[in-house]
Image 1 (cartoon, rainbow, N blue to C red):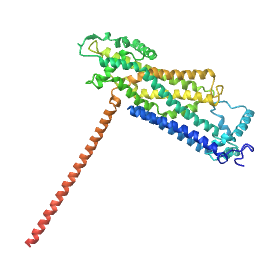
Image 2: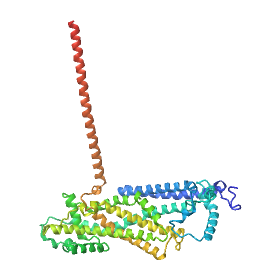
Image 3: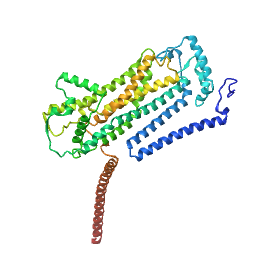
Length: 493
């Protein structure tokens, strides 16, 4: 009998569940959801009032990701019944396993107890949307097995949700660490704003500048290798010094706003970083593709998860070294072109210093590294809660600890070194970003462009109307002349 309860071992459906239990569970879920929604709403209002539009848009991006996750969870629940009717041979399930299969006897016992567990209360609750437990025996009657069990589907959508939440949280933590690290740059900017540059311009040998002394040691292949080694190690300590900030800032100002030497470069960088954060906090299609690849390659005996954790760390080191080396290239360019310089040292920002001439490629790599770190950390805690530390899918303890340590180091390195480096080096391209103007100026320019476009369209329409009106007037005049000629001819006759 359906809903017989614990006596006959059948499922307890919603129609036989006490109403106070249903109401209590729904109340708790609704209250938690409303509190979370109110929290996001208040945070959005606070960001909007403080004119932090990029961060507000990043919050909207987070809401979109949560909506997508809710839709994924709903789809997994709705179609889990249909998934149970996709049957395959048992031999297919023996390949590409994250864990080795248990012995036949143990497998039969596990299947027996697993089937008994599925008929319990929790299993029945999860099968409610799928149409009950009748589909669980559909493949067994055919001598086959379902392609994915209900318990596996349930664990899968929990993991996807944990991954997305971890990615958003760690991205926010990385941004906070990066902004904290750049706080001292504000003091350097204030010193520049207070400095009076009306004094006489001194002529200095190029080697007398501290910026050149720090980054340029000589010419040739030997010094080129030394420059890369120095760039690699410098990202771990003092990635941006005061001389670096002052020189790079002056190079940006002289290239993009020469008539405004007191341009607040620090505020501009923060606005640009907030805009980039909106891109980093999202989960793009290529990140979902990487997630699928990671899950596919997690096969027992391949040890791919070691490389999956090591490769992003190596990529992060390469990105940091490249950005440090761009500073060296700017110093080398000045040292090769000049022997002595009058006044301040000025570098020349250019896209040529970046990979393939694309500064945005650096942000893409940082985005992938942050997502991979989130994957490692979310995957570890999900396995720890679901299967335990000694589970075969977790791997050897030494490998697990190594992966976790690498992920934490990558996260800290990205926040304290790579992200601050990106904040200033990404401005050394050939063009400036929209954040060059504050929100009011950006709105004014956008409105001016829209009005100019409307005026252009209206003027073109008026010209067309005038030409059509002229043609109409000419036709009327011709008709009047012909009518007068006809009337004159009739009078003459």
